[in-house]
Image 1 (spheres, rainbow, N blue to C red):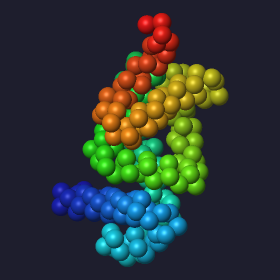
Image 2 (image 1 turned 135 degrees about the vertical axis):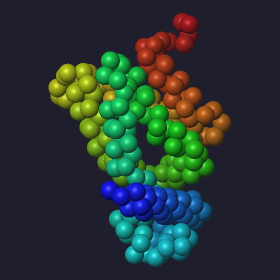
Image 3 (image 1 turned 180 degrees about the vertical axis):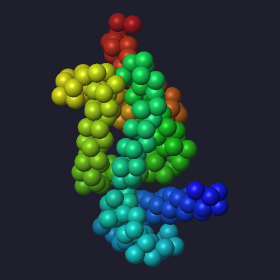
Amino acid sequence: MPVDEMTTLGRRDRKKRQTRAALAAAALRLVAERGLDQVTVEEISEAADVSARTFFNYFPTKDDALVGDSEGDRERVLRALAAVPPEQPALEALRRAFIEAVEEAQGDAELWQLRLRVVTQHPVLLGRLVTGNATTERALIEAVAARTGLSGDEAYPALVVGVAGAALRTAMIRWSTGGAGPLTALLDEAFAAVAAGLPDPRTG
């Protein structure tokens, strides 16, 4: 592919990412201010300076704009996991795979913390998150099974993915308060506690 064509494609991809991000940010800010039922797709589109038709090129519904790009996040985590050397233990491999997504969230802390608050305030959005997370969890189980030479139906891949997911959620929830520290540090702390076997702090 010629260099100028690659440059054009790169600019288009960058523009698409910027438009998606602008729509998500507008949706979150409007819903945080007014409430879920008081915001329309047309208002979100106007706030992002695009048409409603453009909105639907990126998100099927308003709720999808609020919960984020679960498919894109899943693909990034799976690529990152595949890049971790196979000799690394599965739990550590998952921690490393989560780092890229965590650093991205930390780089746009205000928006991500707003998303966490909006989802918490509107439990109806949890259904979409659960569906997306379940698909991601299944894909990670299969990836861990392949790394460890096990079947995806065996207990270990599901357990290690479940524990890693719990560590990630714990870090995200603590971070959403804005006072617990950097997200990357909270993630490392959660994984370190899990790796240590969650010893009772009263016996330390």
